[in-house]
Amino acid sequence: MQGSIGEILGATAYYSIIFMILFLFLYLFILYGGEQMFHQVWSVVPAESKPKLSILNVLLSDSLYSLIIVHVGIALLVFVVALPFFTLLGYGHVLFWSIVCAIFALIPPVFGPVIIIALLAVYALSLGDYYALVLILVIGWPLLCAIPDWYLRPVLMGGKRSKMNAVLIFIALFGGIAIMGVLGFLYGPLALAILTAVYRILFHEFGGGDDQPVPSESP
View 1 (cartoon, one colour):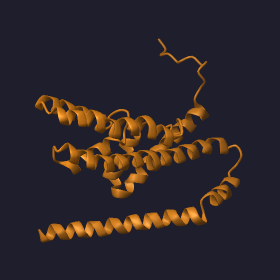
View 2 (cartoon, helix red, strand yellow; view 1 turned 135 degrees about the vertical axis):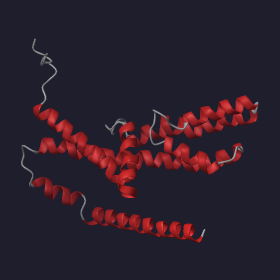
View 3 (cartoon, one colour; view 1 turned 30 degrees about the vertical axis):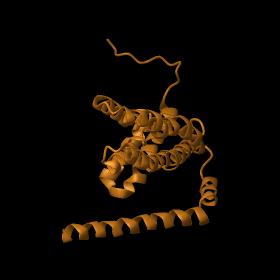
């Protein structure tokens, strides 16, 4: 037990320092660099390369906005709302279900907390617990599913600002964490955005238009 507690405390201190350094770096970059540095670098880019690099710029900014501001913000909100809801529901494992709902909230509309709500509704119905069923349908579904996905997410996204597929962002997020640790939380989606931008640049540079025929195999 002493060894486990020591490892937990050591890991907590390590990741706290990593997050503090990352936060301070981003703060200083935004305060003293940011837009001014971008315009300085952009001014020396050749004119013929700007249309292609603008694709990368748009994808990176949209990916970071979609990941940090929208998806993570909604997931944290769902987690905070889920804690009192599952406590009121009384089925136990409050922290577990809240974390699962927050994780599922990262990848709408493919999964979403609606799956958890549907499973709990079926479970309450099978037990004949109609009080819990009413709580799930009247409180759980609107607060954890409908309002975050149907109202808050479109408002925060500003229409269709993010052009990245939500499933790909989910894969990049947790794949980056699995490969690079905590910093993969940012590096994974950024790598995905760069690969997507490279693909689009290559397509615009060497790809054909819709009016070109599809090449067929020679007999």
